[in-house]
Length: 486
Image (cartoon, rainbow, N blue to C red; front, side, top):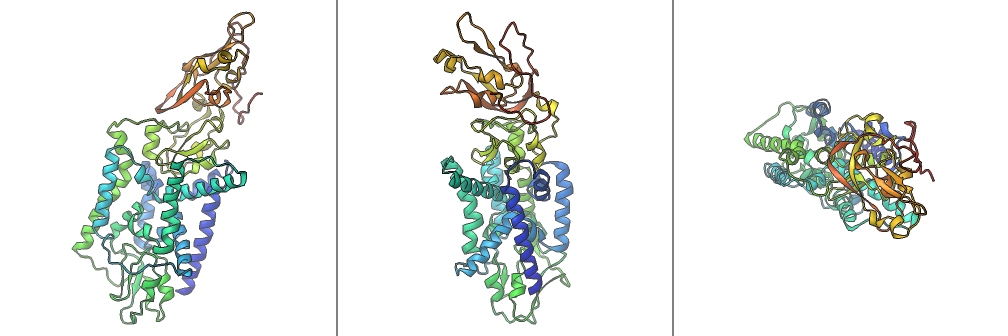
């Protein structure tokens, strides 16, 4: 068992390095490896029906047969906690001891159920999203990469909310494990509540031979979730994450990983499983409760094309940040109270011929979108604030907005002899790509962009005759990313 435990931890380190790399690397060259790594997870299986059936059922069946292998090997949040839990033990900081299953019993899933339903009914799922293990890991990894890049460039661009959400992820996955091991896994993780359904798994699990056990206490001192009871010579299977540390530490080889001769169930186990079932059902469906009730959305984010608008995006996004890393121009950034990915047009604009974000998502947030459909999808509402335009304020020629607009929603019209041309904006042709906002030299900008709860369809490309406007560029060819034409 010691050899098996060492091999398992070696695999943990390799997988963790893989996850960190896939979250740290930018651009769309790693779309499919990132999507393959994030796809087989419980969090992403809560978003659309066929993924629930295929991925969710596979995870549950394998868990019933082999125990909580998902928490042991596949969950990146769990892997981070295990590494820092071991570090805490080496530094003498760990205070993990056996704890009776108070919160791991009926009270925990009931509290989780109330928590999920309460926030879902008020239409604010930020607290739920901030407890999603994949989202926690994604936000921690992306924010760490951003901090490293900021330190290298000497520019700090992040607000207090960004720091707060990063701090929550760091406390849950880095700081707490130093002292309390995998406390998040055992106490707060909603995915862990799913595995609580099984009670004592019918398949393989950790078994203590009561005849061999001498109650030395070593298993209890090394268990990262405090589920090994050296006095009662038992393991709480509802919290055990199959790290095998107890088996490796046992001096008399009384602990093994295998299938028990019999599985004893009682009324308490049934009640625990029933409460966990309700909590898990709430977790799976909570993201759609607010939209289903028709609750209004305040200040909807500008979300990428293919996501259908902020209502759908809010109900499905697990904030894993995969699309943040996939965006080739870096304009998709964590925003809002839950750090959901939205478009930041101060960094650039949505490329006319790019669908990298849609193809990167492992959670089914995006519907497949063809380029011709993307060219007609309005992702935001744009307004022209003409009094801010430099043509008005400084009486000088500009036209930057018309030059970058891919659909000619903005054109430059002549005002008369000796007068600079002035922007003419037709919102029916606008797709909300943010190009005009990004290039506008005025301060404050002459364009404002706001998100849409439901994406709309534009009229396409505006036909412009030479007699009514100054020459403008044709729409970009569907062969690559567009660049500034000046």
